[in-house]
Image (cartoon, rainbow over the protein chains, first blue to last red):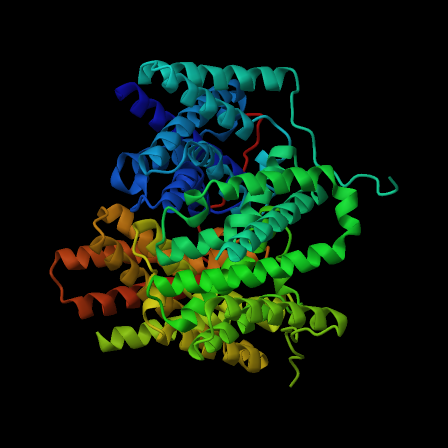
Length: 206
Length: 206
Length: 206
């Protein structure tokens, strides 16, 4: 459980950095950047907790999250140029983050008595909705809707995790296998330009 | 009650289609389209449930909603060109949908102990806020704020429904009368170009 | 306590006016303007209440808020040109409003058992998030992220208030001192063009 908690904080840290970098792109002030960092890191989990009725929402119950987010925001502010060179490392941490957030969100939703299909959705929401709110606050179209395999990887991972639990694989192993699966899926998707088909208004003559 | 449940699912189906079509207009990917379909269909009810404290929110408690939304999204994706020809049918179903959503939302809010005026607002939110969130996620200005009689029809319907309950009209009859009223109001509004006055910054010389 | 309740309603009134004026700028219809007025006035407190689990959210429990918001929206609609000349008065009332909203939000969050640092955040959210949602609904970039000392003043005020409570200053005095502090801070910030540094993507040569 300690490993998972640590990785959860790592994911939170990386999300906070990504929020600060998006705010930098829009020339927000420092306070705005900190808010975007916070929202990116805890937005998904907050939406999940509010929808399932787990209030006060999770990050309010453990001040470590605020410290880690403050650290991530400061790190993102101070080392922008440096971070942009570390794209691969960031990609890896981000993918570990969404993988873990998916599983933790899935489990929390199940523990509040929703059905497995809703829990899969809530796991995905935990992982990706922080980024969606970040993009809404920055007034850009949400990145996740534009064809990369991202939320889809979370959803596939959540289904795999449920399946592994069904096989009574121990919790920690199921976490490791699922997160590895999500990482491999995303690496393959980026390398081979996998993407979902776009929804387009088709030619109306037909 | 069975009729109302069926109509509720019909409204959900139509809202899911409208979400998928909006996503198509913005060239989102298939996953994005499915998310927009879901949010359009359940967003209004979720906002209401979260504000009044009815969690886990309603659609999580009955998996039929997810199936109907999945069906609506698939239908919207496959038959785009066809649906665009069925505008009148869609308009009718959409209006039935918002009429029912208004009444169901109003009743749910009342059952959580809020005042009638707040319940009227919550009924309207149930009906129209899914569309508002859809438009926010797609980064377009919310349609409902631009002068058509839409949310106003819901609000008028909610007031009428409260009044009919006051007269102790049986529930099902009150539903039928209210939904018919909303449909007629919307048809008249569209035919005769009724609209609310725009709010404008007036000439500052005066 | 009576004075504070009155000032709370004054703040609500001013926020409703500011919502209506923003809607006017975007040429929304009258209903849209009323919704924006409502959301501007109660959005921040609603987000706070939903996150800490205080549902039904606060403004639903006291119909005076709806009346005051309706009054503010009507006032904003009828006296637009006049209000634009009263900018200084509006600025003062707005600042009193955010000051009070900060303190009331801080106290409510504390009474739901969150830590002081989270309560400071929730106080700030109460004060500024109505404006953020207003700007999101109107599809403009949130004003508060663009470098004025606004949310920062709320946060500083919340910290000061916690400190004064620590010194066991009576509640009413602590409120007066904190609100005065926020007002003075904002006046100085506007007069001397104080602002937070912008977050920018730095030159990448370094």
